[in-house]
Amino acid sequence: MKDVAVSEYEDSIDFDALRGRHYNATVIERIDCHENLARFRIMPDDGVPRFQAGQYVTLGLGLWEPRLEGTQQEIVPANKRSRVAKRAYSISCPLLDDEGRIAPNESLDYLEFYITLVRAADGPDKAPPVLTPRLFCLGKGDRIAIGKKITGAYTLGEIAPDATVLMLGTGTGEAPHNSMTATLLANGHSGRIVNACCVRYLGDLAYHSRHMSLMDQYRNYRYLPCTTREPINMNPEMPGYVGKQYLQQLFTSGKLAEAADDPLSPTNTHVFLCGNPDMIGYVPPGGTPPSTPGMLPLLEQAGFRQDHSDEGPGRIQFEKYW
Image 1 (cartoon, helix red, strand yellow):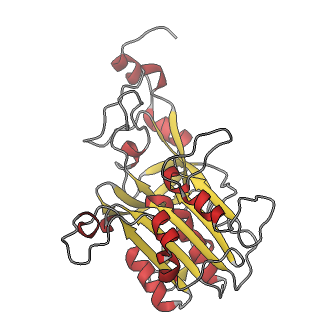
Image 2: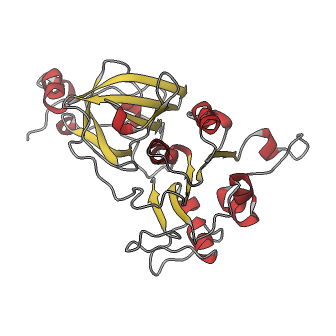
Image 3: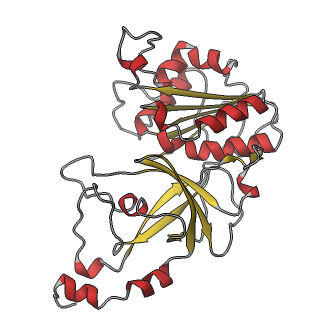
């Protein structure tokens, strides 16, 4: 392609035609937790296909779309402006319907996503974030691209009705665990269900009130939020000071089992990890373990195992979020 001025190239592109060609879903609702965190409910044109709790699908927007003010600037070459940026997101779940009843994904005609706005790259040598600065410009009625296939191996699998299910997440890594929680409760799971999530601030817990309602309705459910940057985490002189509450420390100290009111034994517990790689602690073969271990080695020391061929209790599954 010959070189052309950006304005000349853009004038030659029919962006409405591109939207019509690529976009196949509509935002039906956006629920903001705060300016950098939101829940998006998206309805695919062809309906919601069957899928398993914990799976993911891609969302996409054209590089011609505007970026949210206050996010890192991005220079898109003129000959790439007609492309669509895509990223995979785990499917979350509203947990409750408008009447306060359990609402698993199979009861919904939309898909819910729990997304953090990435305003800038986390290093000077890294490319600016592409999708979320555009995604956070959208509101009810706006169009978006969604993948035709929902996929992923991070699913519940075969779990005995009386087994303990322990889900540990950070930030929006809670999303697939919300789907799993709703599925388990809707299917009458009788064993302990523990959904623990670590965030910086309480305001980062977009589903907090819904989890509280679930605990009122289901005696076997425990939602355990923990924070790292609230005053009770940072100021020793603050009444109720607890220090930074990382999932690893809560597990090894026994406080997680105490709060869950369950021994969290590998003989009866299935573990799911999703979120920050530092929390998960996966070390590839030949890699150097970090100075602060993640949950994987700590769980293995406690008798759990990474065994993808065995769906029995004691198994650890994990999904890295970046």
